[in-house]
Image 1 (cartoon, helix red, strand yellow):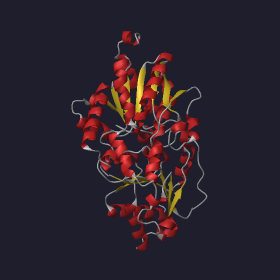
Image 2 (cartoon, one colour):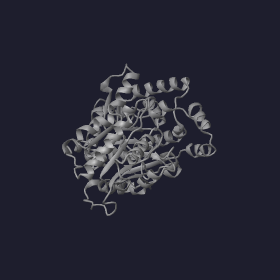
Image 3 (tube, rainbow, N blue to C red):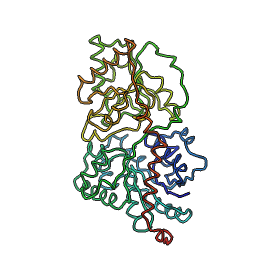
Length: 437
């Protein structure tokens, strides 16, 4: 069996949406003749929520090695607490380039060298963000003959955080140049959606489209094998469920304004609707501008973070699943991982998103979507009233295109990844691989 060294920052027991892609790849790669050696930071040192249930997704035979790191987010927490966000911005744009996880590189590289000596590695696979991990491409290509493939779960220099909080021009030039070096030196670039690929090509026109491969996120069929009973509570309400964090652009003030107006106009009965938001969310942010609104207090409930094993049941018992992507530059490039699990439930999906974006393009063929323009309150209002009326009339039904939805199954996506590994490795001179430093 061939061996891939998989360098990934977010891996169980670290929780969150960014973890699942890596977990599922490593789970299914052995079925396609690839054994992975995972290299990830010591989770005790990382300021990220932990989800120990995700360890059940990791094979007992999985080889996992940890490296030491200094997580600057512990320091950032102090400055945020002191209401000094400008200090965090200054550190990020003048000291920690391209991001704060640059502090991990010396320890990471030492560990990479150890593992290369310990295992007969055939290929190296690096996932980002954080994008500082991508700097290892330049180091590895100088030092070792292995093919190096990179996986971009999100945009880098044209990502949402960069557009919403623009860096100084000197940082911008540095990062774009760094991005170009990484993309051009990597043997193959995998991206999570077509928009990320197009953004890279527009910024780096000397690169060819064939250098990139789109492998989307997806869902794992085994998570949905159990048949869940109907919910026992709120049977007389239209229950809308949102899974995940609301932050940055994902501030739903426009949705709250629409909901309040519909209740005040008598178009929605507040006793007949509920919205449950599951995740590590802050009330002050979620309800910003509407902190003490009685209508929202009656309808909207913030719920705690769910272990991933709990998510399918909560989604399956909802009447409608809510997808929300905030408006802003390049919002068309965002396609959150939850889309695919939402689709697998076969439930109606209320998608308040960019109607011309990647998320909308993925959703439309599913037969499940009720799409509302995230910049148009009238459109949001009409879509919500439509859902509510259909539910009241007992006509809220959808016709899922299961053949389309099943194309996003994690095993099939991993099959595609293994194919990229095989094709890339076949182009490497085996004599070079046998003469490591």
